[in-house]
Length: 267
Image (tube, rainbow, N blue to C red; front, side, top):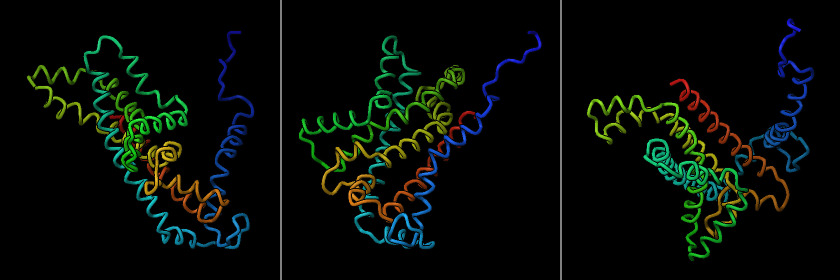
């Protein structure tokens, strides 16, 4: 029929209700966790009034502060190292003179995104054990750096593809050497993508559990691993409070990454 309207899946009957149920299924547990983090009762599922005392208890717990410090230090080092490596790798893949193996190199770099993290954690542990490396936080920094490289590389690589090579060719026509071309043309255009990649790498490292659990040793326990240790005794209000803090930090950084990425698209 000539007058028939084309099919539009967005107008499927009941789609809005199903979508709302799916979002409720995913996010209702998080909302409940956040609400009970402010519960004054020691019993997790019994509401006894609004209170900040569990957040105060978390702040006054020296073991939790040490674990949080370890997580932040490892995340900062891994973010800086993985972002620097990812920037160099993206430039080599998109601006280098590789004739063969470009797709294979990209696939190898992105492999941690598709390989189950438990496999990455076990192989990393075997690798460090085989080399006799038992350096606590240093092992964690190396493992997190390698794991975070794909998260930092993908937005930088995408930005380089969107940029094309017109501006850089114009710089070469004006007799700019490669270093000046990178510093004056390429790097300023890459800053939003580098920032987005660094933010994502920081969040991934900060929240990582499996690799941290496998690689960490005494004195290098990170906050997710410490929370897991607390959970062995059951869910407590302190666990809810720590999880709420981690959730809030992750949301802030992910929102920042999205904003930077949007700026990158419209730059």
